[in-house]
Image 1 (tube, one colour):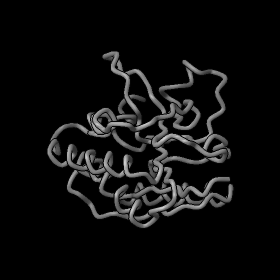
Image 2: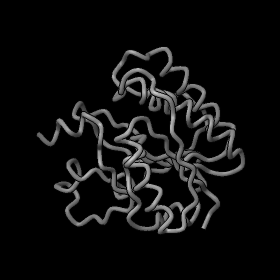
Image 3: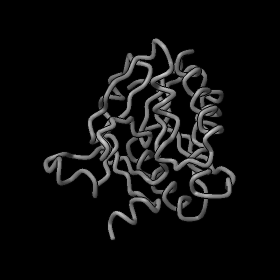
Length: 193
C-alpha cells in the first residue's frame, strides 16, 4: 500500500454525521485519514469554494504524502486498489460528461501527488474560486486550474471511485462501487425528487 492519506472536511451537523461514517469506513479498511471540521463560510456554495483552501492546508500538513481528497458524505466500501498500487501521475480523478457535452473532472474523489505542479494547480484553483466566489460550485475552478497547469499528468479513475448511485447505476449496471458518495447536498436531493 502506498503512503497516501484520505482527507475530507465537513461543515454543519448533517456533514458531521456523514464524516463520522466516512471515518468508520476508512478505519474498517485500515486506511489512514485526516477528517477535519471547517468554519461555516456563509452558504453552501461558499462552503464548496473552501475546498482548495482545505486542500492547501492538508498539503502543508502532509508535504511528502499523496492525498486522496474526498467529499465527507462518502463511504469507502472496498479497498481502493488503484490507489493502493500507487499512481505515478500528479492527479487522478473520475471524469464525466456534463449534459452540455463538456467533460469535467469530478472533485468528489481526487488523488493529488505531493509535487510542485500539484501545489501550483491548487494555488490556481484557490485563486479562481476566490475570484468567482458567486458562481455556482458546479463551475468550480478545479477544471480550469487543471487545464492551465502546464506539465500536469492525469489519470482517469473508473466511476467506482466516485460512485453516485442516482447518476450512475443505469449507465453502469454491473459496477461495484469502491467509494460511494451519498450526495447530501441539495443538487442531488433535487435530482431524486
